[in-house]
Image 1 (cartoon, rainbow, N blue to C red):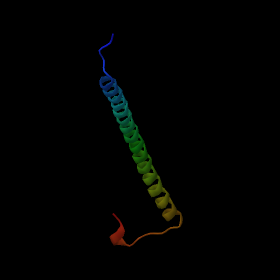
Image 2 (cartoon, rainbow, N blue to C red):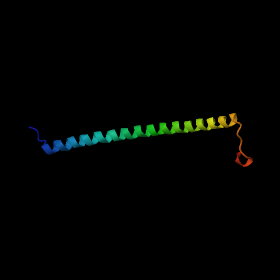
Image 3 (cartoon, rainbow, N blue to C red):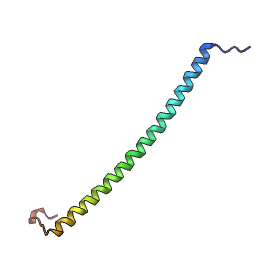
Image 4 (tube, helix red, strand yellow):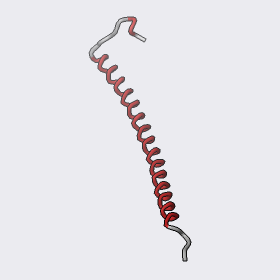
Length: 71
């Protein structure tokens, strides 16, 4: 006969669920971090693209700033 009590079984099941949730949260954290890094890279590239578009539009329309706005 087994000497494992019902309380021990419940504790073991809860520990297994806790370990599963911990693992899911760890993986979820890494996935969320990777997604945020990807969004950051995309946002930076869109910023550079937008800056180039504005510069090209200003040149096409022959718009210039005063002497104190030129860097």
